[in-house]
Length: 268
Image 1 (cartoon, rainbow, N blue to C red):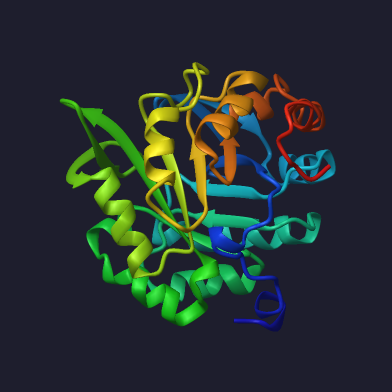
Image 2 (cartoon, rainbow, N blue to C red):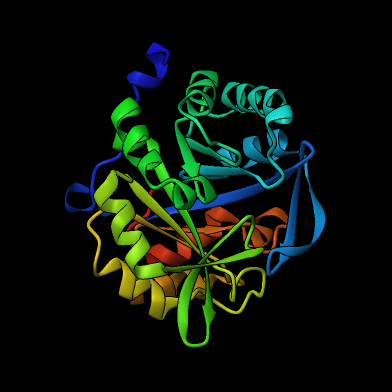
């Protein structure tokens, strides 16, 4: 790892976290372009990820998340170049995920300028990978992303962009991920993703009450009230969205002003 990564402020655990809630645009990247779909399918183009990253940085986003939804080993060089380009354009933290299966994958992306790495399927298939990453880089660099869907009354973890159901119960898996060294959880409700019907607040509150590391809510944002609701009802640390930001339906400065009007602390 390079010195610039080591010098960045580590993300504190929830017990020491600042009061300010974070607003995080998510950029799903496919073949070098930002895309967005509904319930993980029907993808449409949403723009150049580097340009969007710069715009969000200027608007006051607290962090960014980039997920390479078709990541392969062959395209790793493309993602490294994207990370370098983004790092040159913005001065806010950003997380990169997709196709990270080995320590070397994470090392390359962190050295290219990413602040944190996100793992999902690789963690489920090899839970020890979480321990290895935390030991190699520190917990503050490790985000475990969890895609969950309700199956016959039970929230189950899904893999490969939500295409493969597992037998892992979401709540138990998140707790194990925390115990293994995850520094943060990014929880996406597949049932809510892209619907713009609001976050899965009942599940988010349930999870947030049982873990001590930061929880990022993802899936379902459609309007400003949904962000107000998720913070007031669940006390999550951050809320993530994609299409409402990408297509200008919600502007981050206006969103933050509304949150402050509801006594929700955010950084302006």
